[in-house]
Image (cartoon, rainbow, N blue to C red; front, side, top):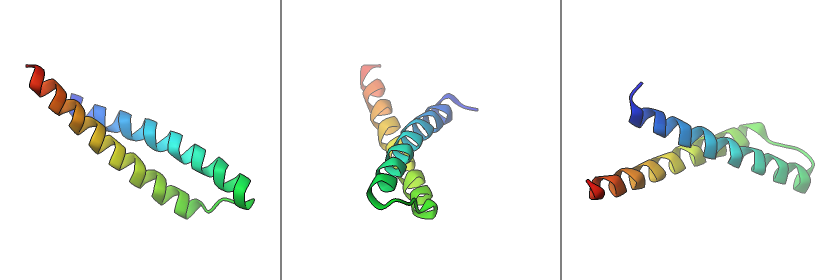
Amino acid sequence: MKTGTKLYWKTFLRSGVIYGLVLAIWEYLDEGEVNFLKLGFMTVFFGALMSWTAVTAHKRATKGNE
C-alpha cells in the first residue's frame, strides 16, 4: 500500500473511531439507547471528511517546504 493511502486510512480510523465512541456514549446518556445505523453513517462520514482535510492540508504544507 502506498504511503499516502496509509496516511488516509490511519487518519480515517483514528478520527472516525474516536468520534463514533464519543457520539455513542453521548447518545446513550442522552436518550438511553443508541441508533447504530445513524451512528455508523455519521462515523464513516466524519472519518472520511477528517482524513481528506487533514491529509490534504499535510500534503500542501510539505509541498511548500520542498
